[in-house]
Length: 280
Image 1 (spheres, one colour):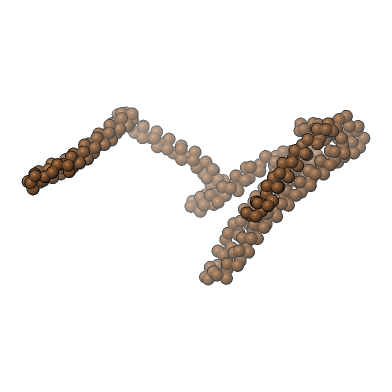
Image 2: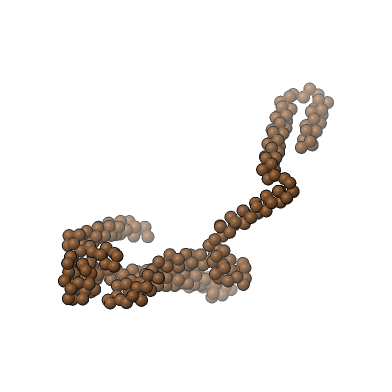
């Protein structure tokens, strides 16, 4: 990783920045930024004109270049194809590295079952499948529904439904270990209930504290004791205790400074100190 960061990471950052700037500025010189179903994209106007992928071949373009739109559409599909391949390949590589490491370590494990030896790789595999599935469902399928030639309104509805759910699915996957732990600690609890308690744990604890404080205030009111006066009295008692402790320490320090004249004087001072300490 250190060699990769030193040799390629900075160069890749520079390449990505300049590529994004170049790809964003190019359509400006050909008047190719035009509306498409409420979005501003590098397409001709109207977007169904010309001979490109989404064109009908008969309508004349009023603005923009259909050839440039076809090039951008091709680049878009290349990127869309590479992203899931890269993400899936990365997940599989991570899983295989952990699995092979655990497989090499099995010969040093004595008395352990195979399930315990491959516990970490199984956890990574399940997480990989969940994250990758949510990515395909919420990213790849909507893009295919939106940009497929002659897409129907039903496909647009499916794409609009799944596309915003990626963050929600990732939240469920991220909190799944805590949910499983809560379910193991509370057998018989439904998975939905576990998610509710795990996600809203802080809010539930806050409500419990408010209820406890409210019940304490109601008990004080029922007994005829004002909650504010109790707090004030407790505060005064703590202050008095601190003052008395400070006085005791000062008296003990002063008794240590006095040079004893005789053993009788020492016994008197010790008796006074014991009397003061017993009063507290």
